Length: 196
Image (cartoon, rainbow, N blue to C red):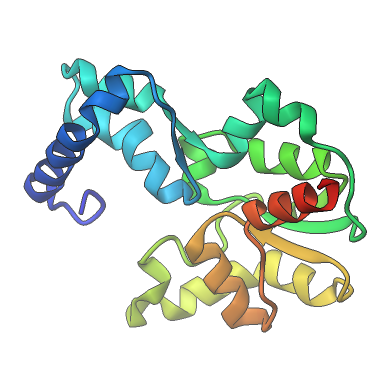
């Protein structure tokens, strides 16, 4: 809604969310996201729409990506160990994550799990949220993906894991290469299960 200029509707929905989460926000409960585009709504867009709202400010400060939260939480961080048997990973970091959140947290998490991480694309995978799903943007979306990311994934061995926290990034990789990328949460879950 925010990206397409529907600010009144975005504000209404955010006010409903602030109301529903009021007690948890006031209690200091961390709000953990798997999707960087969604996390950026609460870390960035929320305070732009409600700059004087203390509850909105508090929520923005309690908003974390899973990788950020795990790395900052001593109880989780102590459990992280290199247990992987597939040490190569190609990581695509979501645009919102690079610009608004912690662009390095997914890479740091994967490295803590024992992966040797390559990041062939410093920019966008080409999907850019809903942009690449629009027929009028299909050509440029594919061109962006083919600059570095898709060739690197196709060239990598089958044992190399492609990783992306963004839904649109994973969809772009899946459509362009036929490979099924993993979310960092899936690799974290597998590593924790190996320790059990």
